[in-house]
Structures are given as C-alpha cells and as structure tokens.
Image (cartoon, rainbow, N blue to C red):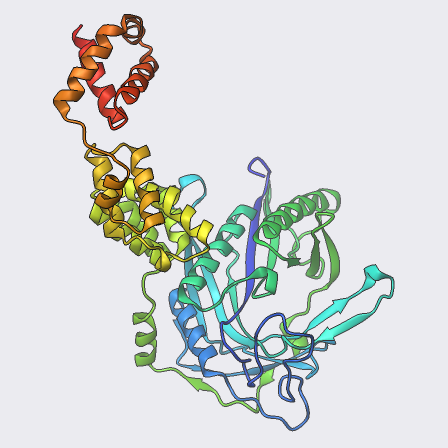
Length: 489
C-alpha cells in the first residue's frame, strides 16, 4: 500500500454499547447471553400506547465519553425518530438524535506508526440512540430460516462519527484500539466486539492524483467487521478493489450511488449488499414522547473534573517524566490506571524507573496472569518489591537471585530480608571477592588470553567457576573485577 499511487481516505462510524444495567428507555436488562427474547417488554418491542423513559445513567456515561473526546457538548439536545423497516426493529423506527446531537467537533490523538508523532483524528459528532434487535440467519443449515432475538432492542448505544482523517487500514485499527482503551478507562463500555458491544462501519474511498487534479473514487461503506484485525484486512482489501475498479471503469465520486458492502471473513473479500440511504430516506422528525435535554456548564465542568488520568496523558507522562521508551509506556498504559500507579510507586521505591517497568512486565504481569488476579490483588506492595529492586541495583543480589527472592516472598508471604535469609543468601565481602577473582585470573591463562584478544564472552568461564566456589557471589561484580585485573596484567 505504501507504494500505491493513491491516498486512502477513511472515516469511521463506531457504535458502542454503554455499561448500563438496563436499556435506554425501559427497565429491561442488558446482560449478554440470556435466552432469546427473554429480556423484552412492551416498551422495547414497540407495543402501541407505551411511553419511553430516558435512562439517566446512559446519558451521564455519554457525557463522560464526549468530554474525554474533547467534544463541544450541546447545552440543548433532543431525540428524533429515524424511520426504517427491518424485521429486528419492531417499532418501525429507531429513537436516535439527528440535527441536535449530544455533542460535536471533538478529537482523539492516536499513537503514530513506527514511533512517529501522535496523529489527531477529528470527531464530527457523538450521539445517543437505541439499538435494534438481532436477526439470526440459518442459510447454512439448508432451511433458509431467519429468527429474531429482541434482547438487544433498546440497548443504549453511543455513536461516534469521525471525519475522513484516517489514512491507512493500520491507522483505522490503531484509532479503534485507542478508543477502546479510552472507554475502558472511563468505564463507559467494555467494548467487547465478540459480544457486539463495539461495532464498526467504515467509509472508504481513494484520492488519486492525475495530471488534471486529484480524483476521488465512489465512497463505499464496509460493514460486518467483527474484530480490529478484520477492520484492517477489510479496508486493505477494499482499497485494492477500488483501485482496480477505477482502472477498469474510471468511475468517480458522484457518478454512482454510495454502496454498502459486507466483509466476508472466510473469503477475505467485501461483497455488495445494497445502495446506501440518504438522511432524507429516514424521514427524521422530533420524538414526540421524550422531552429535550439541557446540560448546564456546571454539569459539564463536573464531568470533566471526574474523568481522571486518561491513556494519552499517562503515556506522555511515562515517556517524559520517567524516560521510558514507547514500548514500555504502551504496555503499562494498556494494563490500566491501577498498573500505572503501581509502577509509579515502584519506580519511587526502587529509584530505577526502567527496572521497575521491566519487573512489572516480566514478573508481576506473569504472576497476575498465572493466578488470574488483578493488580489490586497482587500480594506484594510496590514498596516491598522496591526493596528487592534496591538489593539488585546495589549489587547485594544479582537478577537471578532477585527473582528467587521474589518467588519465595510470593510463595511464603515473607518480606525481602526474611526471604533472603530463608534462601541462605549472604553478602560476599568485597575483599574476599577480590581475592577469589585474583585466584581465578592466575589459574586460567587461556581464558585471559582470549579476553585480551577481544573475546569478552570467555569471562563466562570465570564467572561460572566463581559461582561454584561461592554461590552467593554477584556475577556482574565478578566480571567487573576480573576485567580490571586482566587490564592490569
């Protein structure tokens, strides 16, 4: 793609299910996995005469997301009916927001590719709406039956619409990963694509430079992408398909109707579904059964004050204040606020931010995974683990013994010094170590010759002999002393 004679232009429409216990306009449960049609009522299946009542928690979660996405939150917003027929939309309309959405004009900064600067992806709008049900098709079984599960009908959704600022399939994937991380931090949504908590439609076309100016291909909306990897693969395929179609037909934007295509995960191709509707086709009009909503500046300020530390801020702090590289900072931020706070306390206790990051990634996270626990349940306080890191940093323990002490502390509930004593680890007097190294250098002229010839790895033999003579020696200190002695020979 990098060498292709066109620019990929992508805008995303992301639907996120909010973390509420009940639906947007009724009290039915939103719990995933219940038997079909067991979480419904007259309101969410659209029986005549019923009246919706807005879920206040859903609106507050939407405000949090809008504030974190740097959006301009509307002081006055209303509900609208979006009229269309699908079997899984029994009312014949969806309660959504049209001309006065919850907020407009925001942005999300995403990590750049290959260590490049962050890229800002602008947000057109964020609005609330209810979900439709789910159609279950059975073509593969040969019966060609379709069944309807309305458990999801009425579930609160946040729709986030970006500007066409995304320039590659990989960047689309990165945006979605960063959005998911942000919403997880805010506890707005679990963004579980396997359960339908995050669904993505992508609008894509190509801008092709020609001698007479840039030409744009017809926009295609791609649907049915069930993972971030699928989004990346589907957009890569669609870009290549549009390029070939343009070379064959020369059709440009505006010459054919906008098309919707579905991603076939098995065949790894997009397939045509239908022509895309325009907003006029939905016959929007204000929802008569719900009053508009007003939001004060005080409420907006309270929401912003309660956001806490967000992923982008933490990533920058770890890189600039703690001098971590991009990879280490990303791993820590991906684990969540609690892990970042554990790191900060461990870095302070140990006096070595890089070592703190390494121990968390290599040892702490391994234990959390093995025990299936969270960082809040990890038995070693960062100050306690920091003592072990200080012992390693000061040369009292080598890294291997430090990890033995770490494991012994976890297994027996001991403190650092207690674990050291229980393992029989004693500090070797430096004068004793100097004498041992002099003996080894004198007794191994062949090794000394190899080291002086530039083969420093040969020192491993001396380190091994030292450890056999005294298991408590620090290998790094042995190597340091031996190198000094050899230099003076």
